[in-house]
Image 1: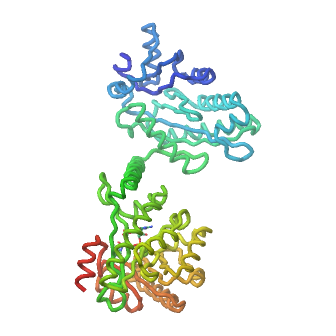
Image 2: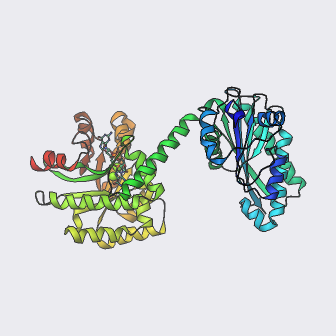
Image 3: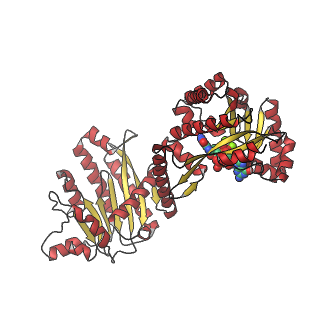
Length: 491
Ligand code: C2E
Ligand code: MG
Ligand code: MG
C-alpha cells in the first residue's frame, strides 16, 4: 500500500477467487502470484516496464496485498508520475470459431472441455508474449481478454503494428493447431494521452470502449481510441438513461409539438403534424434527429410513441371542436409498426376520443417502409382495412421508388425538405421535383411539400401545385397552447 501511494500505476486488480488453472495462467503472464483468499492483488509498474511492486516487495522481503475496500483510496491518491505520458494500452479479445462458425469462448470450453479452453488461452498468451519487446507487458483480464501495457511508445501506429503482429502469430498458431479451433482477434488501442489521470479503472473503461468499437467494425479488426467518439458514446449513454427514467416517470421531459399543415387556401390550417420533443436534465432540449433513433434502438419508442399518439389524438379532438375538418398527422416508427400492436393502439385511442377515421393520418418514412418487414406489411394492410390514411414521409431522400407507390397507394406523399431545399436552389433539381410531382399526381395521390422557409421559396414551389404545404414560412412547430393561439383561435 505504501509503495502504491508513493507511485506506480495500478495495472491489474484481481478477484481473490482464482481457479487453480487461472492462477497458473496468471503466473505465466507475470501477474503477481501468491493470491490468497479475501485479498486483491495490485501490481505497479514503472516507466521502464519493471514491476515496482515485485521489486520493492522483494527488497522489503514481503508481498504487497491490498484489501478490496481500500482500492478506491488508492485510485484516488496513488497516481504515478513515472508513467504519466508515453505509453499505449491495447486490449484484445478472441472470438472463437469452429468449423468456420463463430463461437464464444464459453462454447470452446463447452465443446472441447475447460482444459482445452485453458490450453487455447495459454497459447494465445504465448502468441502475444512472443510479439512483445522491452517495455511491453501482457496481462490477462476477464475471460478471453488480454491487456498489453506498452511503456516504450506512445504512438498509436506502433500499437497498431503490434496488433497486426499478434494477429499473425495467432493465425500461425491456428494453422499449426490444424484448425481445430479458429478464432479472430479484436484490438482496442488507447494512447496514454487520452487518459485523465492514470488509474487502472479509468484505463480499463477506455480500453473496454475501444475494444467494443473494434468488435463493431467486424472480425479481426483494430480500433484506435478517439476522444470525440467516446464523448458521443458517453452522451448517448446518459441520454438513454434519462429517456428510460422519463418513460418510467410518466413521460416527464417529453412534450408534443405541433406544426401547421396548410391546404391551398391557406387561411386555416388543414391539420398539423405532431412532433415529439425531449428535454434532458443535463443537455437541455435534444433534437429528435438524435433521440428518436435512440428510442428506436432501445425499444423505448413503443411506450413513448404510444404516449405521443394519445397526446396528439386528444389534442386533435379538442381542436376539431373549433376547426371541424382538422386532421392530425402522427409519425409512426418502423419499430412500433413491427414490434407492437399500433393498430390496436390507434383504434383504442379513436374509441376513447371519439375521433372519426379521417381525423388521423399515419406518417411512415420511406426507408422504414422499405425494411420489408412482414409484420409491417400486416400493419399496412390493417391500416388500409381500417380506412386510416397513410402519408409517406421523407420522400426524395434517396429511396424513392415508384413501384411500391402504385402498390401501396398512400393518400399523401410528403416531399422531404432536403429535396425542397435543393429544388429551390438548383434548376435541375427543380425540374426533377416537378417531374416527381406530375408522376405522383398522375398516380392519383396528394402531395405535401415540406420545408418551405420563405415567400420566395413558396413562389417557386406553388407552381408544382402541391395539395399541402408545411414549413417555417407558415409556422414552426410549437407547444399546444401556442399552436391554438396562433393557428386555431385567430382564424
Ligand atoms: P419529419 O416527420 O419529416 O418532420 C418534419 C421535420 O421537419 C420536423 O423536424 C420539422 O420541425 C422540420 N421542419 C418543418 N418545416 C421546416 C422548415 O421550413 N425548415 C426546416 N429547417 N425544418 C423544417 P423535427 O421536429 O426535428 O423532427 C425530425 C424527425 O424526427 C421527424 O421528421 C420524424 O421523422 C422524427 N419524429 C419527430 N417526432 C416523432 C414522433 O413522435 N415519432 C416518430 N416515430 N418520429 C418522430
Ligand atoms: Mg413526419
Ligand atoms: Mg418529413
